[in-house]
Length: 341
Image (cartoon, rainbow, N blue to C red; front, side, top):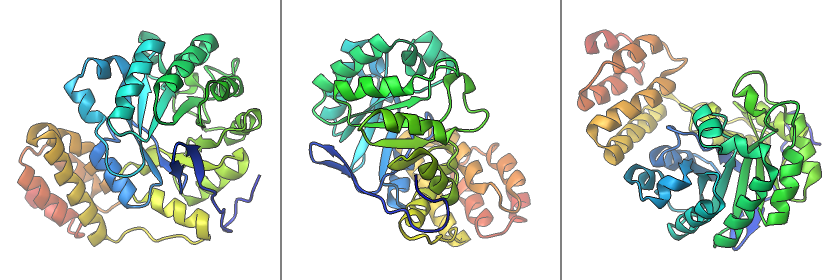
């Protein structure tokens, strides 16, 4: 299934048909409250081969919810919109809207473990418990969509029902073009460790391209996940929080066997300032300031004075003062936090 050392793993571009190709299959995972348009733009610029929107509820897209429409805004290049829902007709209509809005790929969420989605809405990972309904949804979406349809799922609902291979066969029969598998069950949520070997069973069950997801936080993780799963690409989620450059580092390592260095503080400062300003521009000053805090705290992780930075930035309400704080902190002036408090 490959090697886990430093030798390069040469990627084959993934052709989804319809003129859509993922040249570098190192993909930014959809993460609610994280992968908004500013974050996706940065990740793409820094080397991500594909970026996926936050999960969007089909019913909210149909009702033209303002916040939902904003979540579905797209950048230039190959982008995917991820949809969630449990009604075939609504999912099909949402797919038409997504494709009409410029999405190159419509991704269907069969993996979200959150109680509100899986239990309250019978969507996300709950659909893995109803293979008949899952098939109806996939068939409806594929028929309706003018662009390739992909699926993101888990290994199953729990370890008594590891039916990802069965869902993969259903998806392939429906006309889905690619599968992403998170190596956990729904009942695991994000605990324990992702089982990359278990993803190999999905690869064996279908002729579709398979992407492996879960616990990929560095270059070596990516190489091992590919080797153990036999997948054709990796999807990176939480590992990219505060490190949008990680996808480019992983892509470079898998292609060359060489590790790119972490960005130096001046480059991090430039990235953080650009991200902060893009968030405020898109969401407005008040909402943007609140939304930016988690990103700023992630960026600070591991740097001297990070705890003081987090405590300070989470109390600040003046956008200009936050900019000044970012400049000081990412210049290595941790002592400047006292002056900003």
